Amino acid sequence: MNMAFATMPIMISVVLFVLAGAVAAAPPPAAGGPPKVPVTPPAGPPKAPVTPPAGPPKAPVPPLTGPPKGASPPAAAGPLKFPALLAFGDSVADTGNNNYVRTIVRANFPPYGKDFAGHKATGRFCDGKVSVDFLASALGVKELLPPYLKKDLSLEELKTGVSFASAGSGYDNSTCRTMSALTMERQLQMFQEYKAKVGGTIPDKTLYLLVWGSNDIVEHFTFADGITEPNYADYLVKRAISYIQSLVDLGAKRVALTGIPPVGCLPSQRMMAGGIRKQCATDRNQLSIMFNRKVSQEMATLNAKLPGVTLVYIDLYGIFTDMIERHDALGFKNGKDACCGYIGLAAAVLCNFASPLCPDPSKYIFWDSYHPTEAAYKVIIDMIVDKYFKYMH
Figure 1: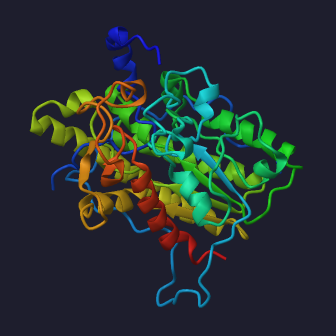
Figure 2: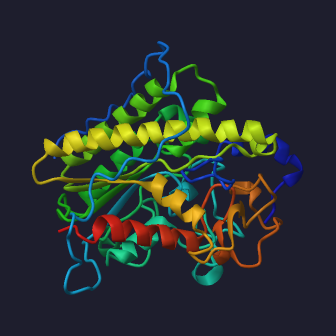
């Protein structure tokens, strides 16, 4: 692969902002109708100062939905059958859409795809399959979720679901502009195109998955936009709830939204003194928890107003924290370092054919500085399916 890595210092300043929706690979902090999402996003939350809550991050709130108390597992265990999976969001759910977008935020070159079938780099930010591939399989849909922008998808492949996600995307359109990623509005537009292609009707039991937020948090702190954390959390929540309502207006009956996981520091900050690194991660995680708490509450309120619709909030913060803390018990030898690249600098073009690789990615939680390995994604999705979808009718 011909890449001018001699000029990489120019690109690094851009790539450092590529969270692409996943947790940073650093130690955790110590301790039908028209869509309602506007084409022109709101100007942004007010900048009036609001005092954020004091103290370290609290434990994440419990999920909105899950197994009823005292419920027993279904008598007849078997594959969970869903007719289709439709995914929206960032690189956690992007299975290759950015291959067709003018952006440097891509993963269509080695060693990405090292453990994928045929050792092929498909645009997934991982050594192999990513979250939505495993989710589609676990729900009995299909083994891989293709990117919507792939040109040769058959009608049958479209009907069982696609990903509209774009690495580098966020709730905040300013985040998308920085990364040249597909905005929420553009992904909704693609969904409407998709709906027309499959005949205008989508089965009620189709699962719609929304995965955004980590990139927004990184940019909020990186660019010091002057917006208080509570106000920015409110803004992101407003965007999320509006998007859910838009999908419901377009016929969605099952919508799941992931909370924002722990978000570590940027690579450059990770190399600083421990105290700065600790505060950096604490600030970001406080905002993650603030968003998660508010969006779960708003989803519960909205769900009560939507008969026949099921909204599921997925506590990804709690799941990911648990996995990092118990990585040994779950079969991982390393719960903090990236398998690909040099310490602190490994994402997108910075994880490349010349980068050092760990001997066995399946023993690492992180593939690059921001994205889980295929093995870690499998554990995450197994936890999510067991906790949220096993009891869904």
